[in-house]
Length: 252
Image (cartoon, rainbow, N blue to C red; front, side, top):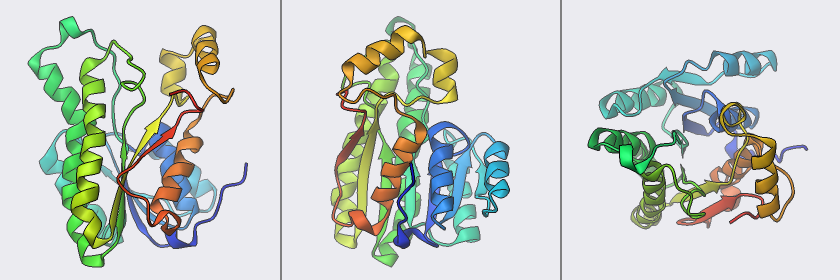
């Protein structure tokens, strides 16, 4: 499948959290191929992704290793990316961790950590990049939710609570920032098959059950999400804000 080219993305400064692997790495690669200037925040170093892009003859993204649960460090890392690449035009709040946990075992410390990993950094990243977007009178912020709580999935209540809150965060910021030309949207992925999913949960039985539930009888992969991110970042979606964009093969 050939990917669309979005002229408005060329030279735009894009910041992606959790961009070293999985869905995030695909998002980063897609933006680089559009000619965007891409910065990445991740606790991993992303060496494999950089090598892949360099092998294609493309400019590697700017990496800042960062624990996103440390808000002070996150602010420093975002400032470093902006100093290197320029004011952020597009923010992709992708980083998350869907580790399973039984509700009986949840402690206050685990609860707070799951909110920090899946929700809190999204707010503070928006807070950090919004002033430059306000000055430019434009910007696109793309938050990542989850289909899990919409499908009433159990076994990870702290995660599903955080991801449900992302949708409220999105709609609130869409209202607050919209008058200054800043769009805020939420992507809700279905089951996206990454290497982690293959290692932990993908079985023939699970794949069959998912395909039975989806209208479209194909499993989804990271590029399916990256293509939606590109469109929401580009000027082509200029009048879209405060919305949930579900990419799930018609599952929900």
